[in-house]
Image (cartoon, rainbow, N blue to C red; front, side, top):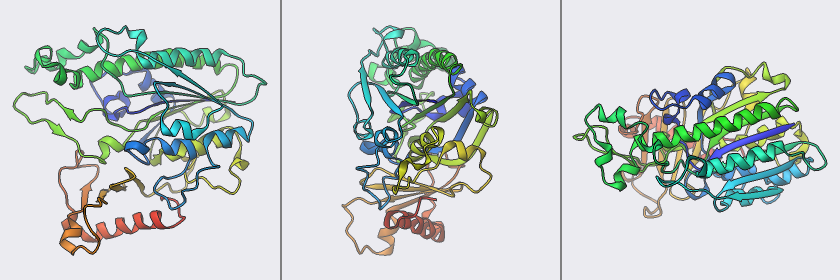
Length: 400
């Protein structure tokens, strides 16, 4: 059995065709979603410095159970005879170190107009990944290959101008913008995403060859769903859009899954799931895929297997909980997003009006950009969502 996870520091869901983008070309991601499965409600467990940490242990960072020392991904797989390799661009991040992979390879690359398309960091990761796919594992047995790259960077010359025409037709001359504004423009980011998609297509071609030899699970996801801190508006007279985490644009992430050469291949095809899933689900998914249900021992994972979420008729999570590990927590249900400001600048014992100022409530999915705070109009909803958050923070129960 083989598992391949492709992850990024950040990849905006609204830049991918299968998540609703109508102007950025992402044919390989879209084909993966069409022939496998796509989760529409995939959210991070944490943002900021803790982003991706749940990948390393299958535990919710905001849970009261914080002893992860013997529950790393590498420890669980190693004890089950599964070889785990990481190929990552750039320096290792906290979650990668905590995961305790058996083998770690680092690659470098170049972004920007002077780089070549095959020099970008993700291209280097894919090339190393293809080589690893073609290698025979020492001693045989099950294998996990994890490929990780950063955010889509400034693209090489040519790719940065692929989508200029879409905006120039509306009167915006992107080429005339200052460099700082130009590199953050959505048209430039679109070129980066299309180039990333091209290299993902190269990887998938090798995956299809490798899967003819043994069953293979492929997952594509990201540690956060947003790149820009500011988007230059497509119309000169409209204001720029400022994003305030931890709303959907940051916390919602892509999650695509496909099974090759396994009995579950026929069940998990052309599926679109609206169940809530999170980063902590990756470890249980791998344990399920490799058939190592006993690997966790007395340390129950707080995530759920994505494979089971796709074919299970039972109820899914009613909500997800995430935060930045310091000042902001959020509860997301199908109908609401409630954000709590836990900043130490606010002392305990505040009056009700003061406490209310630390809470924001938004109607979902209608309020896409979280611009209309309705917390003062829905005090009962706020109280219920805060109760759910307190249960997860103070007790052993799973989030949802």
